Amino acid sequence: MNPPPVVADRVLVVDDEPEIVALVAYHLAKAGYRVSTAASGQDALDMARRERPALVVLDLMLPGMSGFEVLESLRSDDSTRDVAVLMLTARREEVDRIRGLSLGADDYLTKPFSPQELVLRVAAILRRAAQPQPASADTLHIGPIRIDRAALSVHVDEQVIDLTPTEYKLLITLAERRGRVQGRGHLLETVWDAAPDIQTRTVDMHVQRLRAKLGPAGDLIETVRGFGYRLRSSQGRSN
Image (cartoon, rainbow, N blue to C red):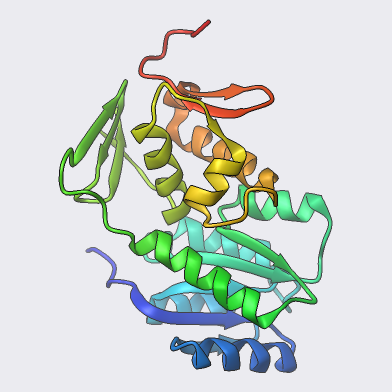
């Protein structure tokens, strides 16, 4: 049975610091979102499965279950794998950012943070997830990869590939411009709605995760050293 649809304006805030929860919930509610809160990883998973939020604002340091474990559980569950995740944490080390993005987080924001920036990032993530696709050319074929825009689905050799909204938008962007190099800054602007001079590592980690999900077809995504990425039309090596 298919999971119930995501509630487009529902955001789940997960943090064990009451003052952080209150601050985030206040600004998100002021921006028009319906906000739920949870103070532990297990409560977050239970609420995500029950309420189907469009996005989870997730702290890393939670009692009993870390934010990384919560993220892994969200991504491995059919009912929550498509829920967007913004990690909000005091852990600023690059290794933590890389791990979060590798596990499928859509964005990563460190504390202390600007509430206004957080609201803008939430809006950008949800805008990517909801962005309609052009009515023409509903299906794109690149080697063994088939992208059905109408169904928002991706197949490799007729096997369904489960992608997060950001991974899907990244693949679509590369596919629409296949054969042409896409700079990291351009991808940040197009896929993440971000300024081109920040967090280029975000692009690298999402490309790495996308390649892994595509399996052997991931080799179609070529790294162009010093520039960015290009999606080839066939799995033959390009010169």
